[in-house]
Image (cartoon, rainbow, N blue to C red; front, top):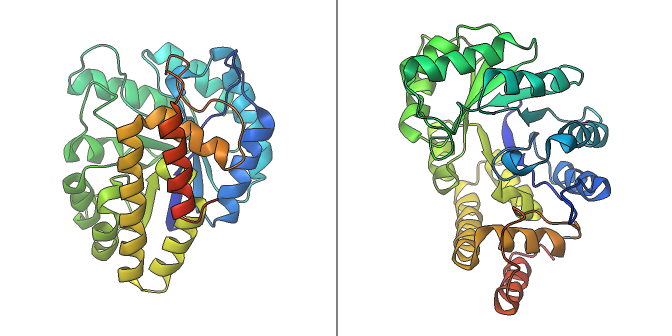
Length: 291
């Protein structure tokens, strides 16, 4: 079972040619471990899996594994649009001490059979622990309870990351699923509600640029101080909303740079951040005592 707590979906720092910046990623990882995260997700949604050059995939994994040094679990995104392409990524991940995260394919329309064929093939392609990623905004299929129950019967399928509170509640309440299957909640607006219900595994990309804040939230939750945790969660979500208004990707990239992690953390087609929003991002981080 995964350790309870916060899991950060890391950003991926790239140079102007799309190559990974090793020192920046390593420093970013260190900041999250210092913040007390229970685990890390590399090349998830916030980590721009679909934007990372194929030539950089192995190098990014290698850098992260060396930076983590086994101190926390490291999960790595391996989703793609064919079983063959997923297996190319699994061939890399099978060499490292990591867990695998996969969504259903995200290009062609899917039905239950085609979506589950892809996910089952991914599980069969590795002996590593595999976590499903229910992300219907990216994948072309929304996993439901029966799908998850079926997939959980595969021995190395160990959990699911979902932002769907109804699916999450069903998975927490059922006695049909194996005991070592972990539901991970990714709907950050409802984290406090989820924690009050008994959710103990929280994962989001916004944690990447608020490490001090999540350290405080985690400490408050462990201490049973839900009101303090709610207050800080609400402040973080309000900050996130301002980032969305200014353009989430360039705002996120600017935030990471202000925290001391050089590189571009946004898709390379995103426009540069304007002066006004750059100043706003700095003000947001100052107001949250992150810089």
